[in-house]
Length: 333
Ligand code: GTP
Ligand code: MG
Image (tube, rainbow, N blue to C red; front, top):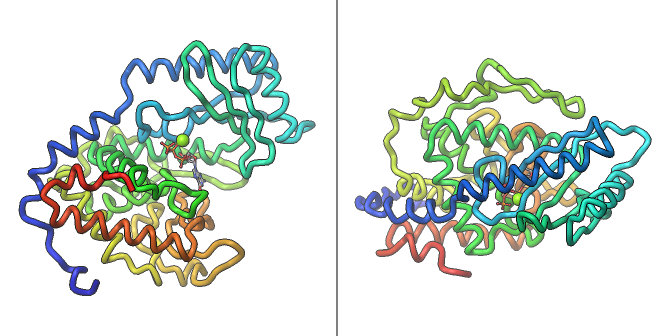
C-alpha cells in the first residue's frame, strides 16, 4: 500500500474518456421522464392542498439533485405545519388522501427510521416515497444541485461512481455500505481538492435557510462560477482514477474526515470521532455538510469496511492496468 500511494496514473488513461462518457449518457434521464416527474409533483400537490392548503410538496433526492439515473424512484417531502397531529398521524392521513385520489400500491411505513408513504401513479407509471418535514434533505438536495452546475465533470464523475457502486453492491446502507448521497459528497470533495469546485459554504452566503434551529447558509449564485474549474483540464477518466486511487491507497482511515463544508480534510480527533459511540463506528468518515455531527459513514461496520476497501482497490487497479476498464469496472459482483 505504501508503494502504491504515490503510483503515477497510466499514461493512456484519457483514451477511455469516450467510453465512460457514453456510459454516462446512457444513464441520464430523458426530458420526457423529467416532465413526467414534474407532472406527478403538480398532480399530487393539487390533491394534498385540497385537504391541507398550507402544506407544500418538494422534490428531493436524486430526481432533484441532478444525480438521478433514469427510472429511479422519486423522493418527495411534504412540508406541513400541523401542531395537533404527530408525524405518524400525518402519514396515515396522507395515505387516506392518496387513496381517495386513485393512486395505487399505497403503503404507509410508519415504523421506519424515516416514516414514509409509498405509492404508484397509474397515469405516469412512476413510483414515489413521500416523507414529512424532512427539510434538511430538501436543503442538501439544493446544495448538491448547485455544485453540479459549476462544472459538468462533477455530474459525469458521480454518475460513473454511483453506477460502479450499484454494479458492485456497495450502495446498500442496510448492509453496511454507503448511500448515493455519501458517494456524491465524496466526488464533490475530490473536485474541491483538485481546484475544480469551490467551497460554497466558505464563501459569503447568498442563501439562508433555518431548519430545526440549524442555519444553513452558503453562496448559491453558481451561474457566476461556471468558469471556476476551467484551469484544471483533467478528463473524467483521470478524475475517476484519482477518486479510486485516493480511497484505495491515500485516505488515512484512522485519522481523516472528509468535509465539503470546509473544502478540506479535517481530523477525526477534532470531531471526537475516534472511537465507537453507540452504533456509530466512524470507520470511514464523511461529514454531512449541514448536520455536522452526522457521519455519513456511520452505517459502515467492521466487516463492510473491508468489503468497501477491497472494492476501492479493485477499481483503482482496473483503472491502472485493465485493457478495458469501462467494461471491467462495472462487472456485476
Ligand atoms: P439514488 O436513489 O440511489 O439514485 O440516490 P439518491 O440521491 O436519491 O440518494 P439517497 O437515496 O442516498 O438519498 C436521498 C436523499 O436523502 C439525499 O439526496 C439527501 O437529500 C437525503 N439523505 C440521504 N441520506 C442522508 C443522510 O444520511 N443524512 C441526511 N441529512 N440526508 C440524507
Ligand atoms: Mg432516491
